[in-house]
Image (cartoon, rainbow, N blue to C red; front, side):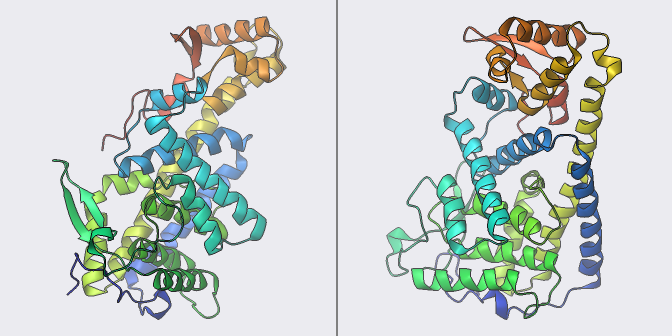
Length: 377
């Protein structure tokens, strides 16, 4: 029986876990593989990956931060970015996106992530002391614990992870070897990624930002195993919807070491998220193609090539200022005229915020749940 108040230094190395996939998991693995392949194909067909990458990453960052009780709305997020007022909850979201892209760049450069890369990813979202924890089990007042913040704002301690820096390094290196060495550990890669998420959260190696770092690693491991060419899996929203089950399964797995349930949960998160993200990708693609079509642009005055550039920027940034178009090489008067034409056509709305006109792509924002969506699941 695991005492949730005591450091779980007996955590089994992931390379020593024995799990025999059930028929249900084998079927779920195949469903998930197909769903990821369909998503990857759809993303590859987009005329501009920037339209998707920044926005999906920001939505993932917003949802992942919400799990940590950091809440912001889409309007606060995009207004803050447009007006360059990145602070508070908006900064937390932007930091998550930066950490995700930092990890992805390193993955593309080297083909895998080293432990030092994971420390760099965590440093961006860690508001406490960076680096692997060095607190010791015998000092109770310094223990790191995993707790669920309940609706009444009280903390329910779920688990106390292993303590001792040498042990944490050993467990992390073992986890990475398990992920990368397919000859020695020949489980299906999707099952490996699911188990690695459980193991990383169980190790809880940092003082802060472990949950966000672990969710970033899910996406990056899917890219490393070539299920996705771009980090577009929008998985944190699934955990928000099923947060109680997530914590329950982590706790039960620590107690009983039955890994199939947590594997099934993580595979379900990948499968359901891939399907939902595919719908968003197809909707974004359809919406963008409509607004850059000759049928639409032909009804508007001005140079069609410049107008298409303006529409593309409106999809990449969501909230635009005239100065954004000027920075892209468009004359200020021309930029203003094109933006107001897009307001009249129904793509954009305009609002004055702090003496600055913000042109908002509400049609795109609707696909992410609306102006003030806060993932109210």
